[in-house]
Image (cartoon, rainbow, N blue to C red; front, side, top):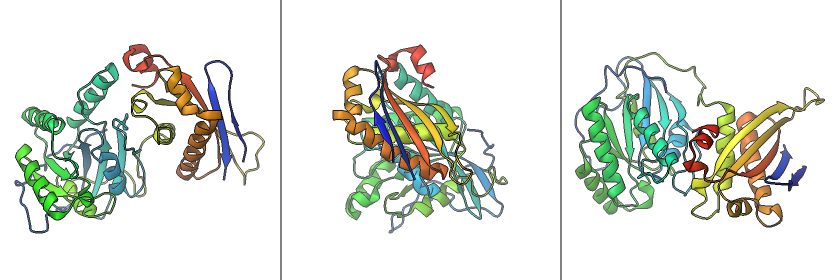
Length: 350
């Protein structure tokens, strides 16, 4: 394994080598929510006689478990996860295909009160996505009581339904984190928050009721043939997925203010010349942008140790994604106040 770090000027580097479209929702809709003794709450549920396929959007305040649930429904990581808020920056399509339905999941940034131009653009992205999907899943974590942020989203969804009717399923995520009594209280609080087509608890970590969530959302999709071939789990470009995996690794263990200031751009992906056909190597050059020099120091770490760790962890995830060996060349750069600068936001893909 070869690694390197430290570049001149405004650049810290580390390298490591090692082994929505929309389907018309003509059949969307369903009865109001009901609650059973087992806390399984259903609307239309299941799939009809004919095959169903379409788009679902998981929405919720930051850190509500949307990305983790997306990964659980798909059966593989297609969205990065973190305990830090505002982890998701792009809509990620995860595709879950069964014998009765194909559910295309569009993960979104958490709706929140924006403080920057980036925050405003992320909220606009969520609202635009909600208008294009067939069913909406509103994620409310069971280990936290519904608060002002949830009420804000509930009002947004109510306004949306007045403009364009879309079924909304309230999903009580992180059900494994509370006991049954607390879960029952949470479900009642969710029911009081708005008018939902269905309510269902689940745990993406333990897998409890993930299949039921998949079937419930699938039941609101329009009758349609598959939109993607069998075996396709996401339609995100590889470069976007790689950037997200690097950002996930960089978010681990950093201070609270840093996640909002991190942006990752894959500059190039090229096969290493002169390699044997049975031993290929892909050179991947990635820039990690922060807003201040002090943040750059955090990412690089003492003697470059933090950046080497980020490089190793993200390289392993990238190799698993691509199925081949990768040389990852990481660089940390300062883009001052990029979250508030329209030109820099455009340059970074927002």
